[in-house]
Length: 393
Image (cartoon, rainbow, N blue to C red):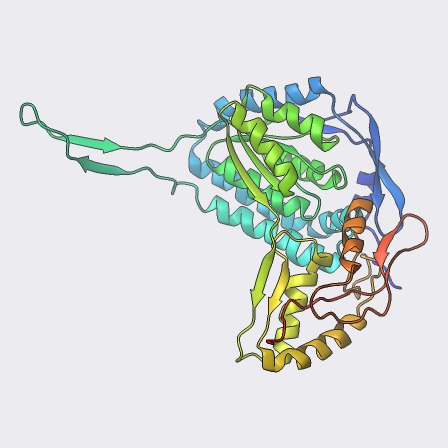
């Protein structure tokens, strides 16, 4: 095993006390402390103190006060600040990728190439919308009383404070989707990260302040999901909720937001399918299955769980897939040669172990069952593949 060396910026950040980022300032929490665990070792790498209800309220109030200034800023000026933030994330790419890998268990390669590089790309994409958010004008056919004519028009106006609830699997990138869209439209945001990956967004918020984004435009509140998230959603200043996570939690978020007439956007997991056409080679199909189903240990809301293959190529694909998956072995996420990282939580591992029940369809025999490694680290000794294609009777 050959792990990369952590940057001094990363080790210094980990040693700091961590809590919230409210009104442009780091702030110690007033709730219960909780440890941030490195999934690869099972050891604590930092401690975060959760927010209490008063801090959650102050974060919302900070965003509400900043909204009046931010909405009046010219749209191109807002876009320019997002471009500056994109450049700054690119400058701190390695440090942020290391933090993300330490917290989430994803490989350092994936953290760099997908998490950080795509976060930068999405910031630049949304910055490009500055000055392009327009309404519509149209002639309407209303009865004329004295020869007059009517014109109708729409204007798009910022809603106010957005609450963004972010999962652990891509904590930076998904947060960027939420904050960049909100900010370019003139909204402010309060982000609630997963308690498993609470550190990276605190650092992103610091960098946002450094590039000139006004205090209160971006706030970060940490804590266990249910209580703090509910406080943010039900706060009178909340105008919209953007949630990414499980279906069960999404239903609760929708109920809480809808009860007070607030807009809500839900990005939830699904039972995604992948279809391979007959013009592909078995090798191409296998590469597609691995990319669609095993990237980030399969911890992606769009990961495919069902694969439909041409019957004539099924045996060749299964044989080749078995060989490739047998070569997969979880390793240290900070080793650049590692292809499969770690599951960050015991609950995700429990869910994964459930997939080892005897399947109803043809399955590749597993050379080893899921197991826990030494200490509290969570891994699996070999991946398992289940094919959803059935032979015709």
